[in-house]
Image 1 (cartoon, rainbow, N blue to C red):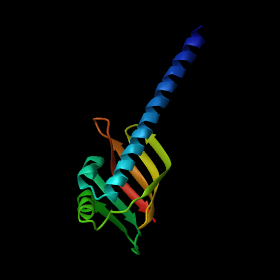
Image 2 (image 1 turned 90 degrees about the horizontal axis):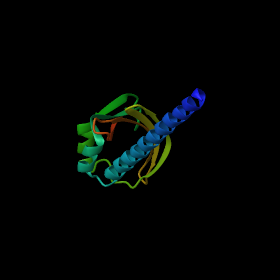
Image 3 (image 1 turned 180 degrees about the horizontal axis):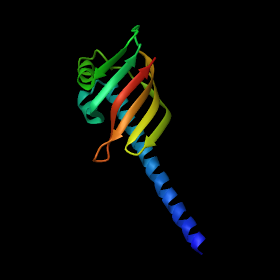
Amino acid sequence: MKHSIIICFSTLLFTVGCQSQKEDVNAIKKTITNFSKAGDTNNVKELETLLDANYRIVMNQLFGSTEVSVVPRSVYLQKIGSKEWGGDKRELTFDNIVVNGNTACAKVIMKGQKSTFQSLLLLVKDNKGSWKLVSDVPEM
């Protein structure tokens, strides 16, 4: 009898944990999709709601560079707002999403007419339960 209760309780906890994980993965996909659409339409106001205050892009040897360049949130938003960046219609493919508590990492392929990137996106869940992007590490 004790074993049956322990098994039932363990199964319940596992089921609840899996459901919570699935909800987080769906919320993460929605955040990334909205991030992509906002960039595609140069919607800075929407991006401001999706990006953590500490957001940055870490570019390792991209566009002919031999160094690592870090683009802070403010510069990224300025480049999107001026239409120097963005303005493409991209198709997203989610390769892998790993949730670790209030932090997650997603490998996403963003394929557009202008360019195609594989990005490692780091997200954090804020105290209101919303997922925000904190880092983008793209690779062409």
